[in-house]
Image (cartoon, rainbow, N blue to C red):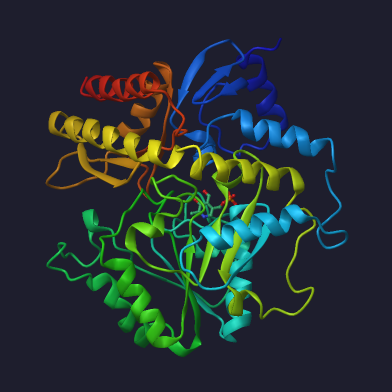
Length: 433
Ligand SMILES: Cc1ncc(COP(=O)(O)O)c(C=O)c1O
């Protein structure tokens, strides 16, 4: 069998360097929250393939569903010979997504593709063109989604020109408030800023939709205060603007609820799911108000592979595990335990400026000192590699790369969780030198 080292050499020769690779570990197998590499090393996975394995690697119910489906049919293309699986999963998501109005769902393959389709649908339904996204946002790597994304390097640098009629406004980043204010005395001025934005940047009556992550994922697990989304919703309603909630990273139990936006009690017009939706297979969905989803002409929407039968069966298993097998409740418990450990670490490690997130979607923002809040970007990088050397895979994020985030499978055992948290704690000690 080839070693990690041999595969790393081959990778350098055959795969373009533009594809970043975090660890030197080539996977041999993965179960639950453990990845075994080609050298037989066991790693605790706090990355979950970037938020894809909320139900764990190779969950037996997901694997069984895929195998069963593989024996029946793999692909007919829903647009040629349709299948009931598509309708059944659409009906489930329509039922589970926030709001009790009539909803419809379409499937595609990746988060970016779903965002693209949500934008198409919003423009067609409103007859307006402008789309507003946020600073620190990440929505994908296709032309439109790269345009909506905020961070220039590495995501956009040299890849323009970008899509027209997109605008970006500051987000509710309380730890680094773009308006220099403090919550709650700010009275979420960042949300009200939208009204100024319509004066200075784009007219409200030309704006089709606002697209926003409930908790910014790649942007640093930036978590808005409770009043933020209700206020955005109000302003959108006032101007007939659609609210698109991108739950690609936050959805499917990541925050202890099926949809993260439920923490704010807000009902979106369109909601996008992907990543953990199909437990490791490529599948994404746009779910939204029937009258909006239904406006596009026949043939205007679609995808050859969108709603692939294997992925749909996997997603049905995922929903069952989350809603019927108690994994959402397990996520809430994990979140409480992790938050307590992180708060304790914050008391002992000066470098932790902020602890934030919801449920088990938590983050530590590292700073050189708490007064200046200078981002501790190099330290975060070193922390990630120290953790890896001790057997934990963990990811950094944020515009400065100084935020450590948790995206572990929710099936992680108590012992694995404790071990992972202890590795982070020990690595923070070592960082001090
Ligand atoms: C919030 C959000 N939207 C969209 C995407 C793009 O998803 P994909 O990589 O599946 O295209 C991501 C990926 O990280 C994401 O976090």
